[in-house]
Length: 185
Ligand SMILES: [Zn+2]
Image (cartoon, helix red, strand yellow):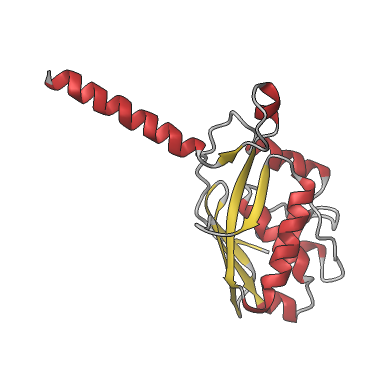
């Protein structure tokens, strides 16, 4: 009797856990079947209420990612997966798991002449699971500051886009733990 109740409780817990894991996925429209699965997108919410003068550039960076990748969407809202902060240090990101973490829009790089929109898309790239690729050319978003202050490319390249879409592909259980190391611009 006790065993059976325990088993039932465990099954209930498992169902609840799977339900929570799946909660991050929304299906567009009311389509069912394979089309519904293909159009499933994971939405990540960001909080830019403490991003000070960078709030607008964060929205623009989110729009760039949304126009580039198909398996994940960045949207302002709560509960936030991503918290954006502003400070006087060097821009950096601290991913905690795939799709969540903190971004600091450090003013130091902006004052040195680096392009704020490239900084913002780069740091969001870390939250989306991309590592730094330095030194690298301006065509690479994850080459960050190594491409120099003249580089004003805020767009991920085809390889970076494909990498993010692969990480957020439906069917992949997105519980990948990222090293909680701080990654800089
Ligand atoms: Zn970086």
